[in-house]
Length: 186
Length: 162
Image 1 (cartoon, helix red, strand yellow):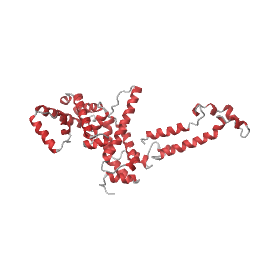
Image 2 (tube, chains in turn red, brown):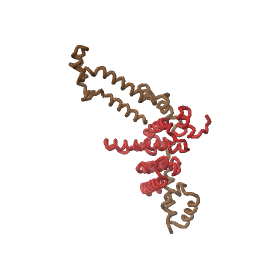
Image 3 (tube, rainbow over the protein chains, first blue to last red):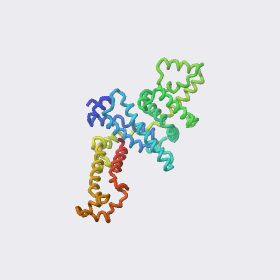
Image 4 (tube, each protein chain N blue to C red):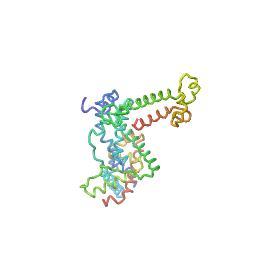
C-alpha cells in the first residue's frame, strides 16, 4: 500500500474490510482527534475513551462514507457528536450528584520544572476555554487547534460558514472578556 | 469612516480573500480604533497557543480499536463478551439461550399448573415451593425478562459507541 494514500482511498479500503488501511487511518488521525477531544472535554481520560469510540464509529460507518475529499470534517463530526453527547450526560450527572465541573488536565499540563508564568497562563486560558458554550468551544477548537478552515468546520458541525464565523467571533469576545487584563498580567 | 470590527476575527483567521484582505489592511492603517481592536484580538488569538495539548504517543489506541472492530488485539471485555461487532450478537445469543431455559422452567410456575397437576409431569414441587413462582425478577406478568435482557444488550452496545 502506498504510504501517501489519501484518506478517501483508505476509507474505501476500510469499507472493504482491509485492516491495514483502517490502521493507517487511525494512526494518522488519532493525535488530532485526541487533542480536539481534550479541548472539548477538559479531561484526558475521557478524551482517550472517546478517541476509541470515534474510530469504532468510523469503521462501522465506513460503508456509508461519501469519498468526496471531506474525510477530516466527517471524522471530526463524529468526534464532535460523541463529545457533545458526553457533555450532555455529564451535565445530567452533575445535576443528579451536584458534582463540580470536571476540568482535569491530567498529565496534559506542565511538569514541575516548567516555568510558573507559563503554567499560570496555560491554566487561565484552559479554564476560560472550558467556560465557553459547547458549540463555541467546538468551532474554536476545530479552527484554532486543528487548523480547519471555516468551510471545513461548517461541514464538521453541520452548519454554515457565516454560522461558524459567528460562533468563533462570540467565542473570542467571551475569551477576551474572561481573560480581561490577564493577557497583560500573564 | 465605516469600522470593520465585525470582520476582525475572519481577518486574523486568514478567512478573507485577497481583495478583502487588502481593503481591510488599508482600513487598519487609517483607523486607530479598528487597529487597536485587531491588535487585542490577535493577542487573545496568540494566547490560545498556551492551550495547545501535547501530542500523545503514537499507536496508543490501535489495539483497543482493533479489538472492537476486527476482533483482535486486547480488550478488557473481550474474554467474556466477545470482541468488536460480535458483542451484540453474542449477547443476543446468550439472552435467547437464557430465554429458552426459562421457557422450559416457566410453565410450571406461571399459569400452567393445570398441566402440571394432570400428571403429565410431576413438577408440583416447582409450584409449591419454587423460588421461581415468587421471583419478582420474572416480572409481575410472568414475562421472562427477555426484553430487559435484550434492552440491556442494546445499552451495553450503546456504551461501546455504536
